Length: 79
View (cartoon, one colour):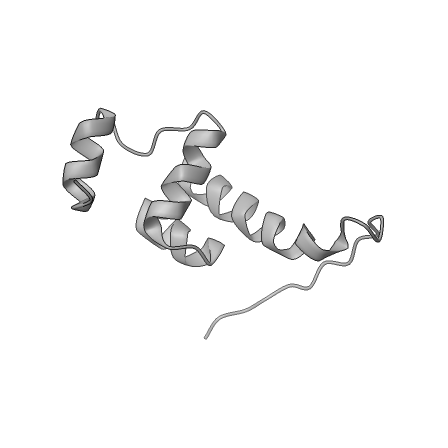
């Protein structure tokens, strides 16, 4: 059985629409970096397809695998 904690924070109304998404992604990245979950599981927790999660990691200067861009494309089957 999964347990959850609800956290409430105040944010400016112009930013509120993305807060939940950003928190999910940040939490997933944190768990991945600490080795608690695999990159695949982190993507699931973030609510993103694996490829999109890998792109998000790259944007933040985090490399999930020690592959070159070409090797990564081949591994993911995207050419």
